Length: 168
Image (tube, rainbow, N blue to C red; front, top):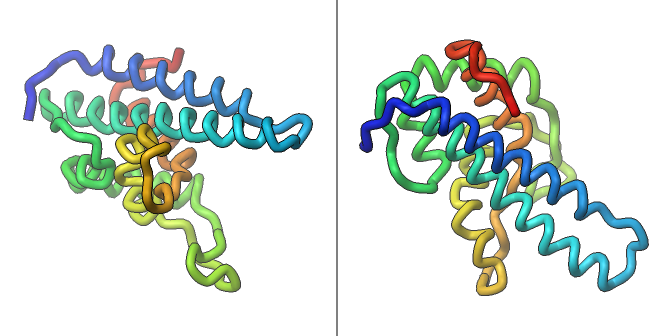
């Protein structure tokens, strides 16, 4: 654990990476659907997800600093999330379930539909920040990454405990 009281800087840095992710994603949408464009866009999608995953990590660390005055180092999203107070975890998951949960196809058996689960999504993307940065050197599939609703749940939780913090 590293001591810190600078939760506002963490919050705004997290928002900066989130904004960068959104801008990159906006430019990765295909227009002409040519082979070259699709190849370029794949790289942009990875870059967007790396920034998004880092933002997610920083929002978790922001919550840690707000609640405990310290944060854990590391990039493993589910391990960081599990270090939050149990009441905080429950609050974030409850908000996600109420506002961002839905149904998706099972990732193995596409004919089966399942409820989207916060912990499962974060576990699937646990090492996204590390793994997607070096995608060119990967020998296996990239991690599944779909944390839009999950990150909104972190931001909402922060807004309830520190309402003076406003997005950029």
